[in-house]
Amino acid sequence: MEKKLEELIEKLSELPSLTKKTSTKMIIDFLKKENKNKDLEIINELLMELKFCKKCNKITSNDNSVCNSCQKNNSETLILIKNHLDFINLEKHVEQNNFNSYILNIDSKASLIKFLSFDENYKKLSFFLENTTKIKEIIFSFSITSENDLLSSFIQENFKDKYNFYVLGKGLPLGNSINYIDQDTLKFAFLKKEKI
Ligand SMILES: [Zn+2]
Image (cartoon, rainbow, N blue to C red; front, side):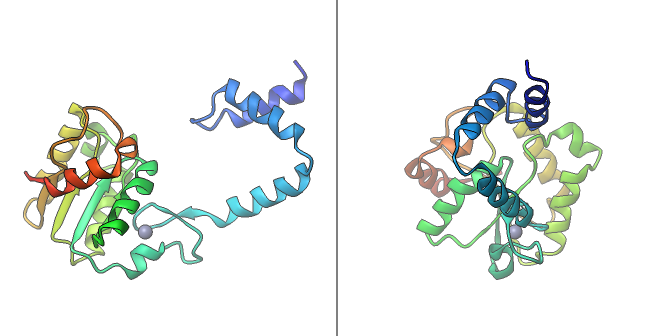
């Protein structure tokens, strides 16, 4: 294989979501494009402008690294998610139903084992709660797995004196990411949220 092609594939597949096969396909598609240089400039510029919100971990382009929703929000509800793609689905739900709430993304790799060592995800959650004093209820919006159940229990145990805790109610399929749940099912799951 052409050495430079090999290098480029290696570089791209450092991203966990890109396999070597997908990286190769991307490179071929890109090579076929007419305005490669201009496109690369635009991609580079946009990537440089985007960053994670330092409060909720959503992607933002705001200079101060705090997203619009964290700046404006004054809610008593925090929805906890574990997958960046879930933001899209939940934000749609929140907007359509005028449901005033924060959404905080702890990393998809967050686990009980890591939380037990008070890792960066635990610190992220603590930081958010310490700096968002109006929060009264926390809704776990994780996919239904035994690992996530343990994680929710641990969070509840650690912060139990200050908040009411809920899980999304009936209708969520086992193990499915929240990102794949349709809006009607999601609405029902929020309506039927269960106090834990
Ligand atoms: Zn934010």
